[in-house]
Image 1 (cartoon, rainbow, N blue to C red):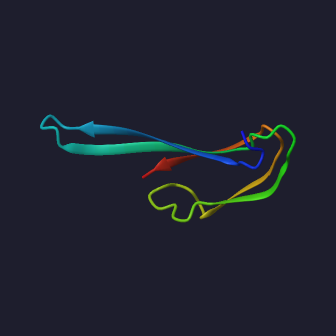
Image 2 (image 1 turned 180 degrees about the horizontal axis):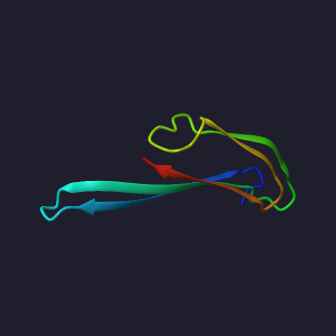
Length: 82
């Protein structure tokens, strides 16, 4: 693996509820945005994650301050999908 990588992993989970006629009744969802520093030696400084359009989520802003990630450290932000 290259030492110049930052891994961004976005995982969404949906729970769909249908009525007896198989018509959509409700959708609930959650997600996790994960920023990974996979390096063994490099510290990442002053990281800001720009999510561009956080529509239909409970994320407060378009920019998430990750801060500093030490080698092999992760930053995780959970959110709800509306």
